[in-house]
Image (cartoon, rainbow, N blue to C red; front, side, top):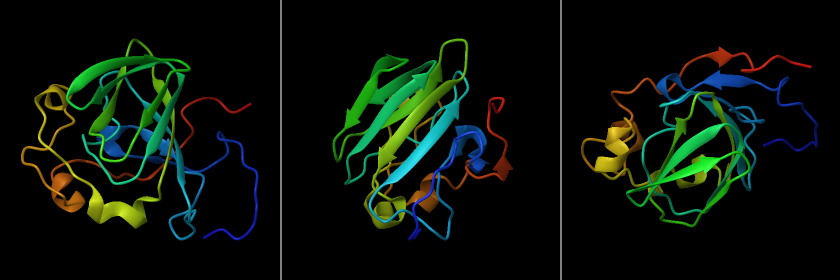
Length: 163
């Protein structure tokens, strides 16, 4: 965990590819996770899901900073545009999918993944499946859910020019 305060510009922070799930900036390193919450900026291309449809035991929040996306929430589609905020209480089934003509940038805040990985449900869902964001068989195993997906990649440059 980072014991020191810091300031970093999102364009200068470390970015990583999530394979078929866009690119993200986590503001923290793998060996120095924030202990109380996770914060990520994720960029999705049109049609690109943020991950697999899931529900977890912690609340999350999603603020669309730029572009448009589609939130699949409890099996229903909800369009989101710039400055829309999606409050996601614990156990809410959800995924975001890039929409529109331009990339979508989303600020995501929630509990640190390391604290709740065993509590994530990946349910089958026909609406999420239409967007390539559903598992074939319901599971609570992240390893099983992402086994046939290109989830991880290497370092990535910020997806916009730095000032």
